[in-house]
Length: 224
Length: 176
Image (cartoon, rainbow over all chains, first blue to last red):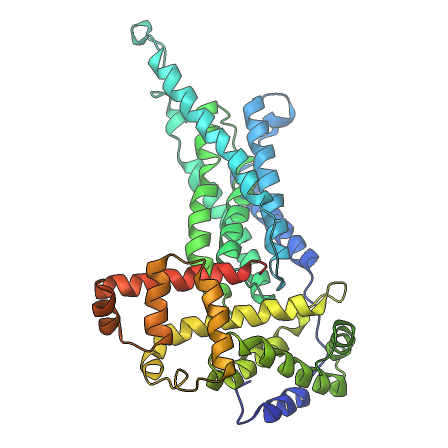
């Protein structure tokens, strides 16, 4: 609908075209993102196979903690994202950012572990150092997790476009955090590599990548 | 007299179900509310244009109102969003029009009130950003004139306007 010569003309035209409207509900967005995560997980399992080792006690505690934090971040960012699809004023919760900060501890621990192990490694012993371990440099997991995040980002953008977000930058960040964390989670359940260095870096890097993509790419897509 | 919250909510609920009569009354009342809202935010000659813009956005996004939540904060959020968008558009595309802006000459009460409201927001901006916006967006100077007046480079004036408008957008997101 375009502007009219007078406000009265516009109101008459809008009234004339009126039809019942389906309400946009945040729960729909949450379900859509949950479904997208499921789709991403199924695709990852179809390609890489589910890692049953996590069910038979082979997975390290660090693996579980990382995936648990990714799930929490995904839930917090999804919750903030779908709530932000409806116009509202007032202070918005910052739980997603605290969740992201908590997840940030994971790569920090990985880096500290790598540095400290390397500093104390006896190279003369012939044992493999953490920097020589190919698992430490297996970056493909980060790439696969990032690719899986695309499905979640797509779902989030579609829902935001149905809604009317008034804080576009925040919606962009939250889309990135949700896509990165849930995409990484969808892939991680197929990955049997559970060392601190590998999990801490490559299983969490999709969050960082998607946060940047979300912030830069999403606002123009959801502007209304 | 502008409708109150319960009246707005009732009319909106009916409009969502396709009640044309309720929608007509609602749009008229929302128009009056928006006119008051923008009276302190934009020059008088831009109000009707902006009200029409928000009415279209309001109508298009009417499915995003949740009847379990208050109506007016929802409407205010849409109005603020469109207002900031309007400021951005003015900055990007209408600099010539702004330079010929006659709002300053119309020194009536509305203009004074608009200035009071803007001054309140400007207090929260860094001085250089507020000055750049004020000179170019309100006083109608060109970028070059503003640069000469402030001693800043033209690029810096542009950057200060850009950052200032961005900060303003953030400020109006917060509860006033």
